[in-house]
Length: 312
Image 1: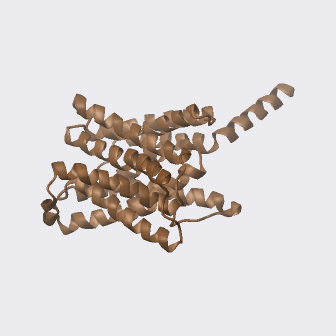
Image 2: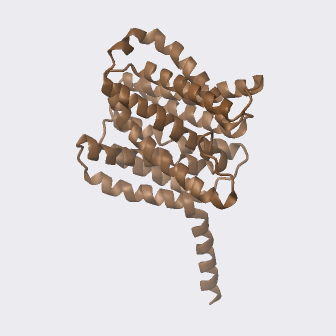
C-alpha cells in the first residue's frame, strides 16, 4: 500500500487486501461522525483544504525519507488530474451540495453510485467486470438506500446536481489513478493531495475567511486531526492501494459499507435509534459483498453442480 503499507510477497497479498478493506470500511465509516463534529465550528471548505495540504506535506516527507524522486512534469500533470477530481472536485461538490440543502439521506444514497461509475469506466477501458460484481454493486446500492431512509431526502435542483457530480468526479479520479503514469506510491499521494488541497484552498478563501480558524473549538480540531491521520493518511492510502491491486468493484465497495458503519457509530456514540429498515438493509449489504468477493467462485460451483445433476 502507498507509503505506510507495503505487502509485496504473494502469500501476504490476501491479508493485505483484507487489511486495506477493513481500514477503508471502518475508518471511512467513522469519518461521517468526525466530520459532523469538525464542521460544528470549522468552515468546511477550509477544513478539507488544510487537511489535504497537511497530508500532502506528511506524505512528501515520508516519500523523501524512503528515497523516492520528485515527480516528473508528466507525473505532476497526472497527479493534478487525480487530485483535482478526487480531492478538489468531489470533496467540495459534496460540501456545496450540503450547503445548498441536500438532505443526508439523499447524499448517502447518491454516494453509493460511485462504484457503479468506476466499474463502467473500467469496462469501457477494456477491463472485464463480472456479472456477479454488477449484481453485488446493485444490491449494495439498494441496501444503502434502505439505510438512508432514516435520513433527510430534501433537496434543491442545484444541490442534487452537485451531489451527483461528487461521486462522478471521485470515480473519474479513481479510474485515472489506475491508468495514468504516476510517481512512486508515497510521492503520488503527496502530489495528488498537494494539488487538490491547493486548488481547494483557493476556492475556500473566496467563501470562507481565514480568520474563522481562530474560532475553532478544541473538539473540532480533535476531529480534524482524526480525519487527517486516519481518514486521509491511513484509509485513503489503503483505498489508493486497493485501486492498484484489486478490482474496481471491490475497491469501490466501501461506498455502501460506510453508511452501515456510520449508522452503528451513531448508535454507539451519538445516541441514535435503529429502525426496521436497518435489519433489511444489512443483509443486502452483506449479500452485495458476497457477490463481489465470491461471486465468480459461486458461479463456477453452480455451473458444476448443474452439470453433475444433468449427468446423473
